[in-house]
Structure formats: structure tokens, C-alpha cells
Length: 315
Image (tube, rainbow, N blue to C red; front, side, top):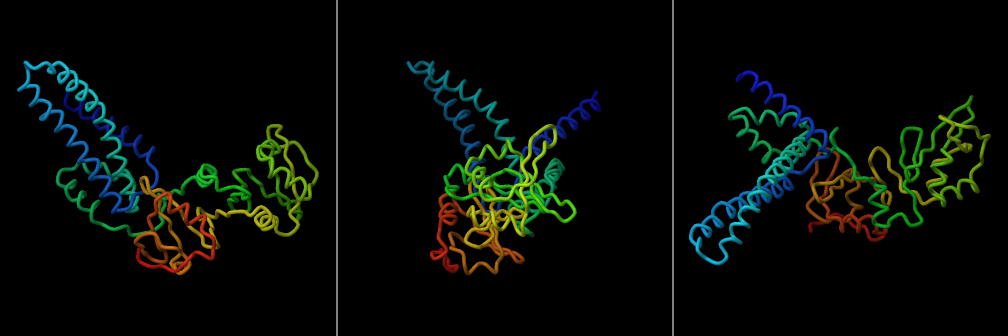
């Protein structure tokens, strides 16, 4: 019976861990981890201290008062909320640990080692003390540039152009590279192109079309001839903001922008430091530098004209 219970417990733990790992993306810096962890723990402990001790004290000493019933209802309600809230707390705290593991270039599955006695004490100090060893790793994910720019009205008279090998995307619309015996052209879905009227109008007026034919699954596709460097032409004519391998180029400086638990981090080549406006303490590692920014600071950086970019200085 005990063996069966152990097997079931292990299976449930692995399943829950897999779900949490699958839903957790990105990473969190050490300093940000300290702040969020402290806030979560202090908030959780304070909630239960108030529920179990403060309210319990009033219930015990004011049992004959007129507001005893209200206190009893409040105590019961807080206990129920706290019970279910504890599961949410554990889930978010678990996610926090996984984000920190990602920052240390480790898989989220390492969190299972915390179930080993004494190792969890060692791991606690590692998670809180050890610095990141690499600025960019396989667990990094950029923000959704298109949604961010669109939501903050940064795409007026501009287009986001994402490179993907020889293919590229303009505001999420794919231009697929085709080479027929040296005759290079790009194909795009007519239906998707129609979703961006300004882009459709530009392409139909300014790009040389080739013979069109039904595409995959009967989807009609439009083909445009590449007369040399179509990508560069579109980038210049559309005032394109280029995203290449996760790096977005602002004022000729490529940035990798990622979320850092309600803040943002920008990563860039250290050689570009002299051209970047500094907002906070800079972290340097290998050939890259990193800064933590609020949303307002990130928008300020994106909107800053080249003439206002200045050298690095302490803030």
C-alpha cells in the first residue's frame, strides 16, 4: 500500500512539474528574483498570520460582542480564500524557481532536486547568490514585438520586418523565398496580405508581380520578383524595424528585449554601449551588456531619436 502511494505521489509530482515547466517561459535576474521572492513570502506569511492569530485573538476575546458574527464570517472567508490561494502561491513560487534556473542556464526539471533533504538548503543559497554565467541562452524568449509595438501605437508609418533565413515576415505576413533556376521571387498569401491594406496597396503598386497560381490547399498566392534585394527595398520604403534572430534594431543598434517579471531587460553588444542612453546599472558579461528597464523607459529608448542617444553614465 505504501509503495503504491509512493508511486502515485511521484507520478503526480512529475505531471505537475511538467505542467509548470511547460507553462513557464523566459528567465528572471538575480536581483529581481530576490525582490519577487521576498514579496511573495512576506505576503503569504502575513496573510496567514493575520488569519490564524490576529483574527483568532479577536474571536476568542470578543465572543460576546455585537460584531462577533461578522468577525467569524470574515475569518471563515479568509481561511477559504487562503486555502485555495495557497495552491496559486505554490504554483507561482514554483514558476519563479524555474525562471531563476533558466537564468542559470539550467532546465526547470532541476527543481525536482529540491525534494532531496539538505540539497534544498544548498540550492536555496545557489538560487539567491549565484550570478548568471551567460547573457543569452536557450531559455531566452523575446517579448512579442508586434503586439508590444501595436499596443503602444509604435507602428504608425512603420512596419516590423522579421528575418527568418531567406524568408521574412512583415507585420507577421510571410514572404516566402522561391528560386526557379535563378529566377528569384517571393510568394505571399493573398488572404493574409489583404489583412494589411497599406502593405497590400504598396506591394501591388511598387513590386513587380509574376504569374500567380493557386497555392497550398487552394489558397491563392501572389508572387513578386526579387530584382536584386527585395528585403532591403521593403525595409527602406516601409521604414521597417528589422528583427533578426530575436534582435530588434533601433537607431542602428540591435537589442534583444525580454521580460524580467513585470520589467524588461535589453541585451546588446558591449561595443554599442557608447551609443545607448543608460537607465539603470549595467551588467556586462562576455561580449554583451544588459540593462533592466521599466516599460516607460523601454518606450523612451525606442522613441528616442538618434541625436538624443548619449554615452553610458551612472544613473
